[in-house]
Image (tube, rainbow, N blue to C red):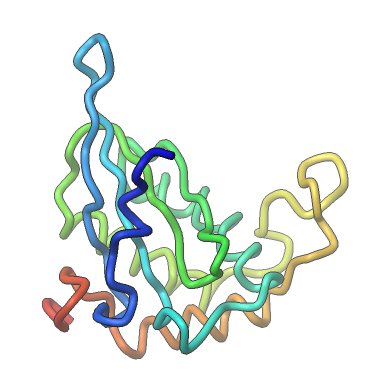
Amino acid sequence: MADVESFTLDHTAVVAPYVRLIGTESGPRGDVISNFDLRLVQPNEQEIPTGGLHTIEHLLASLVRDRIDGLIDISPFGCRTGFHVIMWGEPDIEALVTAITDSLRAIAEDVQWEDVPGTDAFSCGNYRDHSLHSAREWSRAVLDKGISRDAFARVGV
């Protein structure tokens, strides 16, 4: 089996919340994509309930795109501690953290239920499993700690 970087990361040594560049890859035509680890809660100590994580996922998909160019995808980790953030090129980590922080602030303070995209059977494969209340609580908790630019030390918060 292929080695997967996230399975070699010492999850006992990281200090969440943080954004960490996992790596970059170049396609056959030279296009570069960057893969980031957006860790919102401490691995093996907390996990975001699926309803809240699902709602954060749907909102970040739109809100981050409104704040930074080049977002390809934001996908939740199965462990429910954060997300993969896939972007074109090699974006500045400060700009990415700012876009994520501003998006989480919008979730915590501004977003109303009507604003959450993909909450019906047509547009979501599990539309009943959403919670804006949980998404707000977890977004506030992350904002209270600040998002570090380093996975192993509190940097820039």
